[in-house]
Length: 278
Ligand code: C2E
Ligand code: CA
Ligand code: CA
Ligand code: CA
Image: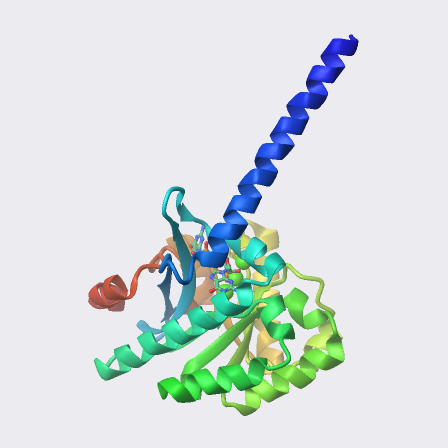
């Protein structure tokens, strides 16, 4: 029995070592990802279903690791956040996406651009200056830029958050709450935030076409946004039933695989005509 427990321990130990080694390796690889040109920004269309037109796109970062292949953001963004790499990565994404949006404008296809902002970036003292510098360097009209923040970022450090958000708003940039409904937001606090858009989390949208409870939550969020004077975007729309439900509730802005997955810029442009017909 003694030997078996020793074996068990060494099994777990080597398992832990492997996990740790993998993490350390990922960490050092991630530190070099920008200079090694391994990051790419993909774009997912945002559609106005009442107008039947694409009005914007969300920038989503992709990491093409030389041996592991594509590492999903859900795997490396939390790591990047932990080791602080999210700051240079986030800045690179913002710059790249703004350049791409400018390129589309030059081609006569103006698009609203959404970029995700992480907790760590939001806490940087010079965040607003850096955003301002990037926008003006590239020449993008700030009203074309929307920054997405999650509820958890906004609900912590309440007073400072509001001050920082107001500064960003003064640049002329639009603000939205991402994954709305999944955080621990207090509704009274919500009224104090200078935000423009609520993005209903995919977990609610997923079942709203057939499940009464999800449908109720989605309707409630749409009404809440309406009452507060915010726009609303439904995320993760995959089925025609979900689309029909949202249309009936007059939620006009949607995003999801039903319309299009995130793709490289050239694919985004190539698919525009097909998407416009939806
Ligand atoms: P998010 O900001 O909530 O982005 C939406 C995610 O849902 C994306 O996953 C998108 O590909 C996926 N999605 C969109 N429509 C559908 C759908 O109809 N069905 C399903 N199943 N999924 C859908 P992705 O690209 O893997 O990104 C995951 C998360 O990683 C993002 O969630 C965001 O939190 C983070 N992320 C991605 N890019 C960036 C970035 O540049 N900066 C920061 N800070 N975070 C990023
Ligand atoms: Ca987002
Ligand atoms: Ca989201
Ligand atoms: Ca998410």
